[in-house]
Length: 501
Image (cartoon, rainbow, N blue to C red; front, top):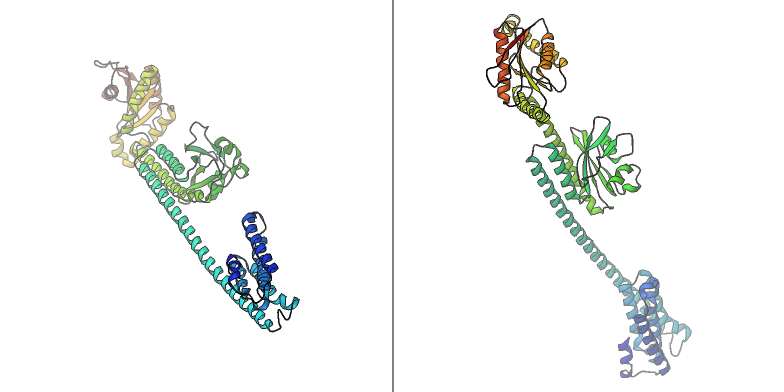
């Protein structure tokens, strides 16, 4: 625009209209000032075509000042045309085409010959056609270039997102690996449960994580947590209240709640106690059976990227299932190592572990403690005459009959072969004798049993206590069997007293 005004004195015009020139200069200055001053961002989009469209008026004035149809300023019509082709829409470009037509065709219609002779119609039509071709071609190229730039930007954004997701996945996998490694170091299922909850918070950025497991009464109870220390244990009644944990437990599928505060499918009691907003419920599956629910909660509505981290919770849930299965297996192995296979009673190993605990408890409570050894009479002869299977049945029946006669606090164990031991916490020697006599009376199949009892003197070891009971049992067998003998208090030679049935 400025160049057109500057070169006007250098080009000898075929005609000279200073008024038109002054109007063109004034309008050019107004266009520049308006472009700078007006806050275009606050105006409607279509107002942006006003400055370039106004410049068509400047071109018309310059042609009028420079010899009308003979003026060289007609080429300036390409400026607003190209501007709108580069930065405008197809509608804006159509407006520019109207401006080009107005610059070249309007004078032919409104002014006419001799300033604008009829021969100018061909030039004017050519200008309009060529301007259309150039304008729409340029706009098409610009649109294609912008589409490529947008595609490149989109791919770059996707790549950055993919890199963030990959980095987050690697971090999650590392956290799961660390949790798995830490779990593998312990055989304590309770510690392993807390490690899993801690890892769930680390991976997801959650405010808390908790593991809910069946309580055996149609409900779920919190068995471990991270972030809820000091809070009351969470208990969910399956079917008794709305609960996302119950939904995940019954369906065996993940359940995510964007905002638990306004979701009727979530226990509002749990939501208030944990102050959870977004919550993820992940079922813990073992052999396609749900054995628990891993719950992760956030104190805000999480973003899409944060939610992607919940995929790692599924891996933790699988690790939880393996941990529980391993804990159950270890518990069974431990129980098997401490249980007599035939009678289901504690074995000698378990007895030797349990008796010192009972002695320590008796010392703390200042309560008496008695130990009895029982030995089935003539068991070898019974086996030889009736067979080992009959002997096994006798042992099983004896253990079952004695179990019915004892309290839950009493400890009955198979000491070895046909010999059994009984720990009677809180029983005096008189009480213990009465209990052992009931055991002897409960013998099945008409068989008899000999017994020896020793009352702990508060000083001796477990081996010494059992040793005194064993001496009393030996005396019972030596003096004719089918009787109960009590040992003295020790530590000197035991005072043996025979009680005949």
